Image (tube, rainbow, N blue to C red; front, side, top):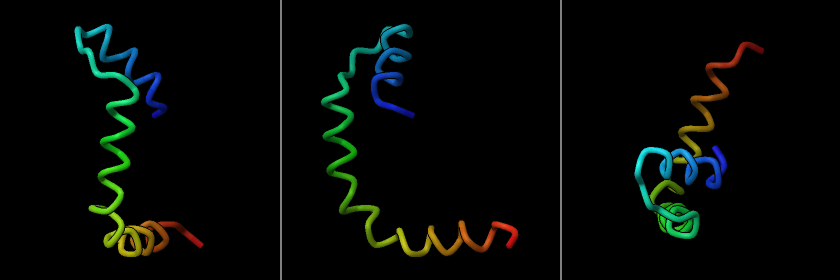
Length: 50
């Protein structure tokens, strides 16, 4: 989901988190999830009918 849409949803529910803040969270999480990407990719491929 695009961050601008998520920002709008949060605002409608009283949240005040900017797109910049969410983007920074995503950037920082890159190093956390990078090691697991090959496993997730193989799981996604295994679940698809060929």
